[in-house]
Length: 340
Ligand SMILES: Nc1nc2c(ncn2[C@@H]2O[C@H](COP(=O)(O)OP(=O)(O)OP(=O)(O)O)[C@@H](O)[C@H]2O)c(=O)[nH]1
Ligand SMILES: [Mg+2]
Image (cartoon, rainbow, N blue to C red; front, side, top):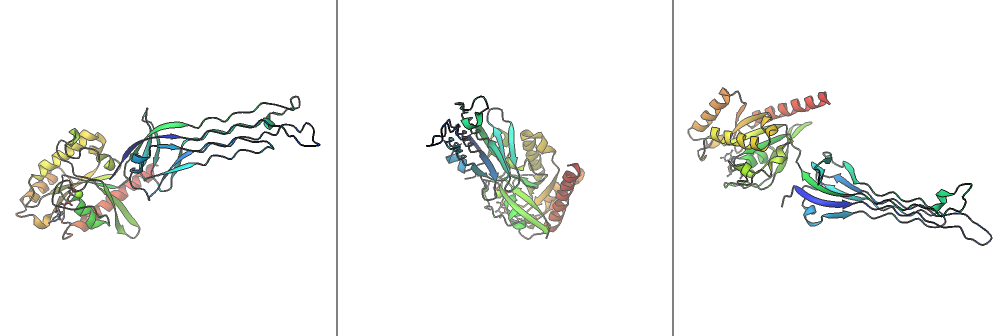
């Protein structure tokens, strides 16, 4: 099961209380205050990790609590600190405050960590309060409580290129022929039920990540088919590819399909509809008379859209498509570098 949203509650540990104690020893009269400090409470820390790929674990465990710090003791012994609780999450997880939906953290790099709830501070023991005029203070501090938070975790995969298409357009076949990702492939709609990422290596030191998401249909924005639930995974892609089936089995006119897809994206997120994109005509090894391909190509030419006819089976057209994508991705990365 692919889970990409979760609601959880976290509570950091409280600080331990400081101690109130006096040194009592034979032959040491009035030994003075020796109450130690309380230990700090454990933090709740989130850590991005490649070992986790979904938020599934949070379905089962929704409350996380870090241990409190120990209280201080006599002989100036400090209490031990509560251990931090480190929660692994997939790369691309966004952590939000539940009530306000404020973004607290966006974990985009492997091993990146963030403290989401701070542990309470340990209280000071009475030995800290001795002054020349008050050499036997009974004063000590209690530990402060740990932070508590209700959170929404949201996974938005990080990919450079997103594949958008109607069910059966050939998205999964394309990603499996250009990367080592192996999503299910079959001749029925909605074969793919969760997003897949694939890394495409262009040269030894140049690669980019492609995301295959489940097919979209007309009315997805009203919840038809699998609805919009997976579109959030292409929200962070820099470039979109619209895949259109022009084979002899295709039941719909590719231009109509393209307009449907564009309309659905726009209803979901106007920004996503502004993203640069190119058109890919799929399954050209079985294009019959080639009429659909011609229709689509003429449409792209008249609208000045980049057009790539491909067959993921014979690999025809793939080198040109990959070279184009590599160029687009590196342009975007250069722009990001110069603007940051
Ligand atoms: N002949 C031919 N068949 C293809 C090609 N690409 C995909 N197919 C076939 O088209 C069907 C659908 O392919 P998928 O890759 O599963 O399509 P999808 O877009 O991922 O479909 P969903 O996951 O259901 O949205 C499968 O039967 C594939 O074998 C191609 O280039 N040539
Ligand atoms: Mg698929």
